[in-house]
Amino acid sequence: LAGADNNNTTSSGTAANNPQSSLPNLRAPLPNDTDKAQFLMKLAPRIRRLEADTVKALTATLEEVLGQMKSRKEDEREHQQQQVGSSLDDAASAEAEERDLLMIGHCLRGLALLGRGKEAEGAFARVAIMPLIRSKVSMGRLDEGGARGQCTGLSSLLDDIAIAIHGSFGSVLRLSEATFGAADDGPVEVDLVSAGVWAPLATALMADPGIKMALFSPGIAGILQSNYVALDSFLSELASSLLKPGVQAEGNGSESRSSSLSLLPSADGSVNFTPLYFHPSVSPELVSAAQSRVHRHPLTADFNKKWNLPIYYQLRFGECCTRLNKAMTRVQKEGWGA
Image (cartoon, rainbow, N blue to C red; front, top):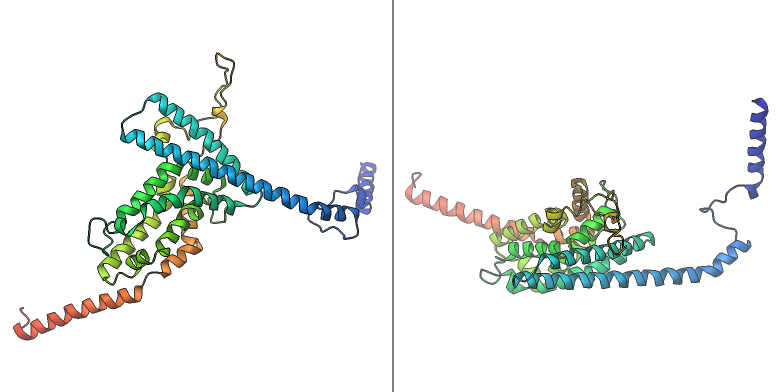
């Protein structure tokens, strides 16, 4: 045993004294005068070019698949309105969505591995969310059901936006959150809920001067309070409303299918690998973490600063003073029994 210990000590000491036999530290910078450093310096432009081309290809593929999914969802809604459809159409639609989610998952993971999660978030916001928001947000829709400037349609507008995003891209949001989400409050590689949905919606509400004035500075205390409550409730429930399972997922259990199913070949010899696909499952902890990221997003702080609360305080203070003055005047004229 002593001899064995001596041999081990000798071999370890030899490895320590001989740097050629030890594994190189990839984090340590290479000397400038070595051949390896010069080789990497010459290769660096090609590596950056390859990375840029890969990011461009993944982003283009992601945008294309999102566009296809958007078109398919619009066709499905038209068929539902016309009451045209069959179980065969539903099966084909489910198969197409499985294929689209598989492609989207590959693109998201590829961009995340390259450290380009912002590219994925921007593509999702640009292709999927911004066209939907532009088609729904307007002054006419904001004042629907009331006089101009009263914002009586704000609550229904926000609910309509959340339902439309969940119906069209809820599966993509659940896939992203199940893949990259974390139950703690740390950052994530791809955050489609905050950067892909909330950021473009908040930007749209703050960018239009007319909508911005009607929401944040209406000049009437009651309208300002109603707008604040509606937007605060929408923001506090945004993650849960977007990440809840869809009707189709609840019906067939597509998000809880097991991958242990036997892969038996069909009559023509083909094998269905669908049971082996990743099916996202979003836990309440992930939903809570996603909601926390929405509240911590820098745009949320800018959004909250838009509220003209000093004006609201002055308006409410004026109302209270007016009521108090009327009550005092009435008591002076009619006595305490008035």
